[in-house]
Image (cartoon, rainbow, N blue to C red; front, side, top):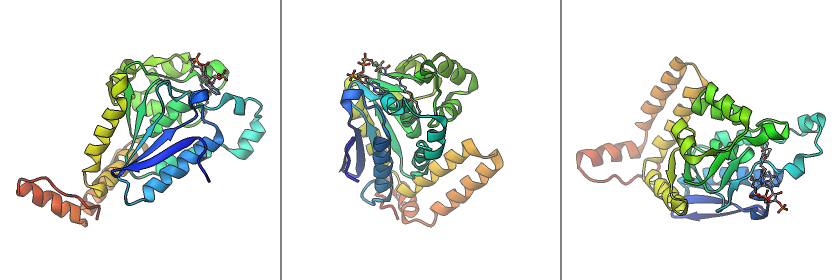
Length: 257
Ligand code: CO8
């Protein structure tokens, strides 16, 4: 599939996905989501990529699902085509994904950011779920992911009211990770990606898996999986290199094996 709505490139082991539908504030139509998911999966398989960055442009990370595309849908067409099921594939990506948010992240755009593992935002960015104002509701994980991030009470208030929230408020609630000056968002995101890139890839992957199940399974199952993953790191050269480097008081050089 040739990419129409995204641009992508790999730079120094960081795979970048640039949402590129600026005329409609990166409104997410089905083809665009398909392109994003396919590129994420490609990066996940690419040994030359260690961290993934997803970014929009100055006005918008993404202003939500493409309303024009959805307007004439019926419950039956939606149910039969199940257009949002493809989003589940994002939850299977093993590598760290960082969202760089400028402008608006609304509706499906906020859901896309919440599907990323870390969110870096510009100080004037706005986050929200305006779906209630369109007579619908979040449909690609917003009720689940936001509630897990900030708790039921605040999630309900935010999604029920459909209001935009400032980056600072979003950070205070724990919905996003970092707020920086608008013009520094991409730089800060790359800084973070570079830090992650130098960590042991197998550790990053197993940590992501274990942290995810903390949300999804009873505590004891999560503890067991975390332990198993911890023990597994000892099968890697990077564990040996990491611990050896510590004892030799030097920086480790990780290879991903
Ligand atoms: N869909 C389609 N077109 C859009 C969208 C959108 N979500 N958002 C903006 N656009 C278009 C506008 O129609 C406009 O196009 P044109 O120039 O041809 O008129 C262009 O982008 C610029 O937008 P505005 O002129 O409105 O720009 P403003 O700066 O005045 O306003 C806003 C910016 C506040 C972001 C405004 O555009 C807005 O309210 N957009 C809609 C936001 C919204 O309601 N999002 C939720 C959509 S529903 C949803 O996401 C459901 C999620 C379900 C799962 C996700 C699956 C992908």
